[in-house]
Length: 500
Image 1 (tube, rainbow, N blue to C red):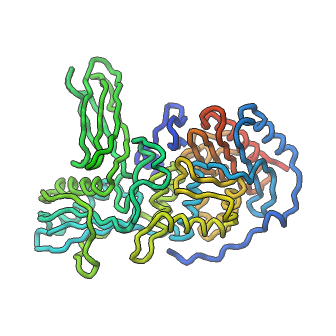
Image 2: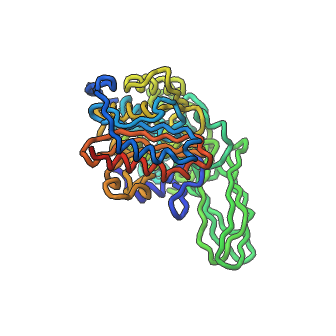
Image 3: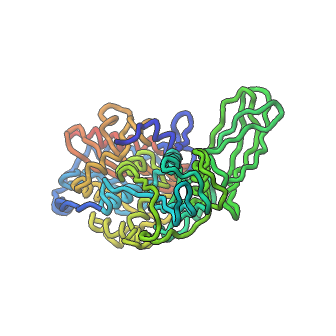
């Protein structure tokens, strides 16, 4: 069962303005046996008819002078027959931003299946009745590992009678062979939570929430980190002043040891707490520090080090506890509904894990490319760089996205794929968009946002009863791309209101 929407919103740290408009690039407000997938008709086999009313409605939107200066790809097909109802520059590969998550979700479902679970193992090399030597934490790439899970691990160890860890806490992250930054992330230097690092053992999406509350008059504000741990250094330069206004700035600075949180500005005595999420730069040691704090919170003594390392072989180590994640579809739904970049990168890399072999980015990209070709993509006509769509390097055409949508409609796990998409006017990154009659609750689509990109691809049932697949990609407009979401929504409304 999926977590409640409000709970997911808090966990994923969606940063919205009061009217729901995104103000930061890349942040949206917006291994089972696979059954044989039925073939869908090729486009060339379907007779092309003309639909002048639909064409006029979409062309009217595209005639905006500002959109004339942008690159816009639009493609609409009957999801069952493949008949093309409308097309405009549909074969030009464009940057799709977070629409890349459609590819990540489909690949993960195809390779792993919706019921796949990730396991995190706690083990030791030596145990007595009440103590252990080293505590090994062996990650497998789970993307939805939270502080409450870590607390549950600590409680389990305490229930087993363990009251002392005599050695170190050692993080085994050998499931992933690569570094912490996914491809393309190095092109931007920002501490934003939507650009978080990845890792085989990652807690709270590799982000930390800094909460500032007023202190005594003239004194610094009080700073609290969530999750609690001793890894992150805090520099507090805030000052408590009269009034109820808060002007607090929070930044995360990489250091040799990990991350330093610097907090400045003023906070009024009557101000509400201010919370800001930032990325962390050393996921393994951050996770280990969170575990160390949880261990001590339940009364287990520990004064060793937290460090990376490799766990003894399975036949040698002693297993203490195994944590299994919720089914993969839960993570895919959270990723697509709220456009979570961290989850996308974790999932795509996890598809490359082999028996006893660490996952690498070349293998993961290769897996996705193989799947995309099966879904009807021309291998030479697209570029896949990472799993989230953040920044540059990805290029997919509107027609190719529609091909993917049609393919997944007939896939064994198509229902799970479709159910993971935001619903217009209801939830996820579309909850404040497309609320018009016949569109709200009917259209399901993935959003995408970068400074120079806005994208929307998905499904809708037309007024004539047809199931349609569509893709609307806008690149390089004169102003920030999210300004053109109303244009995108007008096109989507025209598609939904199509009545032959």
